[in-house]
Length: 448
Image 1: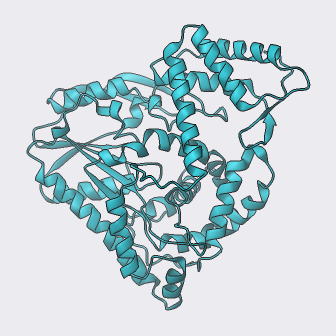
Image 2: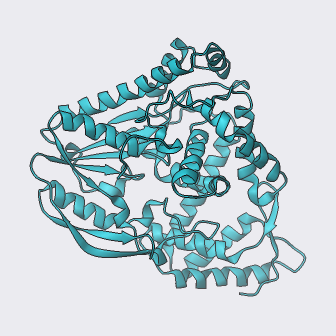
């Protein structure tokens, strides 16, 4: 629809080009969250929003993002889309709370953080002189990098051992194991290692590939860049997943769909699956802890595992290295090694990935039966060698670009950390079955 609105004022004060498509995408995403998948209606509603904007703002004025969102709410309600409006409002409120929390020191305990696990990791880091970048650098200077690798890997393997033992204790009632966690937390490697341990104990598995439950691409919500969003749980047919999990846990046969990523289409009722009495269902998914994923499954028959690189290491500025930054780098490396995906694109889109995590994954981490930390203190020295130059370039590239403010902020933060870490080029000490090999390549494990 034609409009004289050229720009929008963001909350930061930055002025960016107006884009009607973002309004349509935001409306569609809210609709998808409550079960709707009508893109034409979302487009029509966005045109009503633009029409009101044209009437309300003169040629020489620039609306604020809040003004536009207020109009979106008004249009949704007036057109009888109360549920969609509620979801849209909730999303705005959650985003506002996140910004408020990030903008000030929060004395209130964050319930989304696994404090007990963090304390254990911090205690371990202090006892191994790996709790600060300075201590890490000192140990590397003493040629102790192979020892650091060994100690880090042993900590992670102990976690996997404990998870396996906890599962074994509940095998009388268990029917499925869900391995969840945000992007690049190491789910694939951990799933394989867990399966190896349980197979040695005589247990059998069937793996459920959740990717086959994606809706057809035409029904996917898009992110604010106009790219299809595979990160949100609403991209999955949660109702069908839940239905199949119930039947499988009861020993019934189901027909698994097949999703073709080349065509972006799904075919129903393709592959038969049934669990024998001595078999467990193994599920590796971003959204294994998301309530709607298994809402009708009894707690007694599912074991929920959560992964996060809970590194406890302070930089020279006295602040802890962020787990999300570790996962960002991991995903950049994996995407460039295995998917021919430009790491710059990963950085530019990461704030959207992060937003989905904060809303759909991390709030449920404390509902897990066990948490595994996949963070390796030595990995930052590998990243200093592989990625420091790129982050330094991005730090300058995005400076002053209001459309890339988040990418610039992350580039500056990561660049400043990597500049202080002694780089390690020789990666031969890293085991072939390390969780880190999932991202840097050279793994001896067979990924499905």
